[in-house]
Image (cartoon, rainbow, N blue to C red; front, side):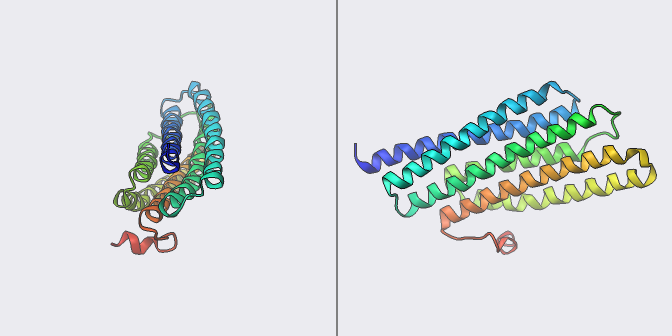
Length: 225
């Protein structure tokens, strides 16, 4: 087997591990919000078990990337792919942490009467979950256009977070007894916004991987293209 073919096989394994990690992260977001909507504390343990898998994969992926950098001395596109994979690995692990943070907020909320019907938070979760999926698909497929579409959706997530805050502020101003529950829901929306930010970071890494262009400080320019 030629050195390049062996490297290609290792890169294929790296892709598989990242895809598995991203799928777990998506599921964690879904189950965390489902636990809120259905007021189902049995889902907390599911999310926690999946976080353990995500953490294990993070270590495996880091070790694989370091081995490839040290032993294979990749060049050009392969080098960019591996360095991008290391950053994406970290973003996915943080997304998993945020899903766990959401369940911690839900654990407080479901012990109290429901404040209001949940509409915007599930919508935020749906958007961020899709952003995570599409950012990873863009990475695997080296699709800069799909990555840019993730960047544009971050604005919608931010808008929903603002809408949620304004609505809950109205509750808090009209009835002080709603303040603790409102604050917990605001924190849930904040965690979802941060998940969207991490998905956006992955999308920016994809643009760098495909085009060799760092757009981290020029997002608005990119979004207006």
